[in-house]
Length: 342
Image (cartoon, rainbow, N blue to C red; front, side, top):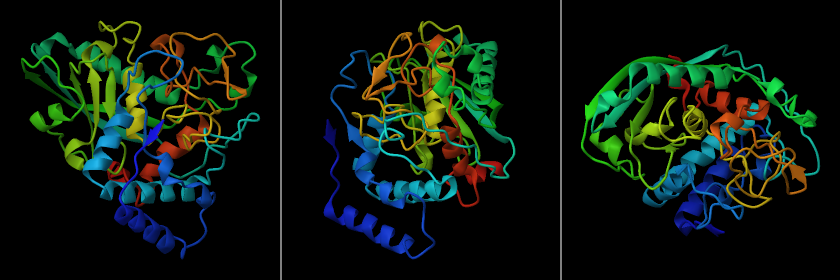
């Protein structure tokens, strides 16, 4: 595992920010904010094998290298998130020694509705139909609102209290179609440069295109440049698409999770790498396919059915209360995505 080491100047600016914030009221678990955990680069995504389906962390690593100021922005977002959610736990989300239950926080925000613009960028943009786009919206709304505890395997009793309704919903605000002959856009935000996001401060922008390299999608975490804010999806990942077993729309659910500040369930590292959520058990790598329960790593059963793992679309079906609280913290007054509520 390799980590990105920023310059001393950037490190100093982060320390200054920490000292400034420490003058305010104490933040729960403040000492656990280790920014070295934020950016983890690995040549191999997991010792368990499989492919790197999501490139959100690699995109984040690149953006931090290109814009060191992003480091401080993300520190401030993390600080505010923990202040609101009273996050507790050790790397990987909890001590790794047993189940941790997190209560859903009553934040007074009610149901959060996020308007969505979809940009279809393909040689034949009409090949992605309106019904597919609406089906994708339906999947997002179902996944972010359903607890799905009836799908938990026998014996997964520790997870019953964790599955949650996030109270976040999505409304299609418009679809833009662009016939473009380019066959592979990569993950360097070229598709966003060619077809810029529309009012990204108030709308989630989703680009549907051919990414290449076997990559299903990538997202930008909160705090990044507004000119590149949003989610990119492989066209075949939409419901009914060609990318089986990843063609039921769960790539969008996973990437929107990143867009709303969630990390991969295994924290993009070994057992002590943090995903900043207390009720997700520690793990040391991605899971693939449809694992049997229990799949034990780091002395606990992996939450393989969580949307932030890499399992098949048909085999992921839950967010946790801790993930819910983390996402909703972005919409609190002054939060990184609070402008979407106005």
